[in-house]
Length: 93
Length: 249
Image: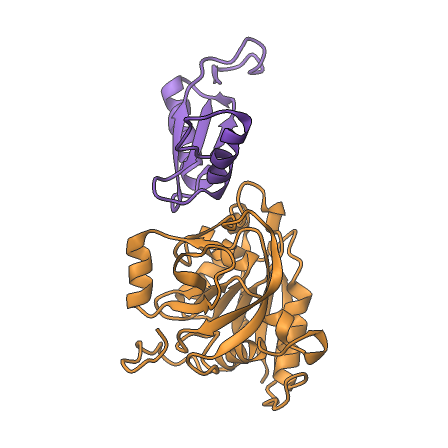
């Protein structure tokens, strides 16, 4: 599973602004709207992907993101490779 | 009977002894003169405690609770003691969060808003001037409205952020407790400290305990610590409504 946490629109992002200002100095012109967020990758044992996604959304809501300033998006990357889930029930990656 | 003030220690807190000493100094009147001779017992409380029974006030001190991993305060809010802090606050008990403690209170939802990285992405360790904007809180009741205090700050994430509706509500409900006179970190509306609706839960980024003795550079924090001591010493009267004639906005 992949959880992307990003600042909500309108919340200032000093890190993103600094990176955006630095890019032209390296010759990368024409870039704007740089926003810095966080990404979490985790493997979840669950009966199916929908169940895993629901649990991870709950985690993101309660811990991974601060809803006052951040939004998040949960994506299922696919079943974990064989051997990654202790050979038990399906693990979503 | 002396007022008992609990100072919560999370793994990674580092200002708890300063707060204890600051409160004792303020109570005795050392450093700033004119002590009221109030008896205070400031005691450390481990974050694993599930009860705050017997305490008259609670302070969440500065530091890096749980290493500030994920976000400052994000993990500390799930420490066992936080359920008791929430219940204590809802019961009207005085709760003050200083610096990292302020961050914990916002993460816990006991105060609105959030504290982001400083505008200039620098850790700030300096002395700032803040203005007392309301005296209806447990941390400012002994201060003069509009008083300017020199207090140390020591933070990377002190940039107070909230949406426009929240800042409007904070102003309308007289809940901005302290404002920087020269905004050091980009905080919205120059906010250095806010309180809940009742005024019994206060969070601030500056460190009053580090300005509680002339020997260490200042005593402007004493009036705040004495306010808390007064609040803990029994005068838990019903929260005052915002005075109509308040000059402090």
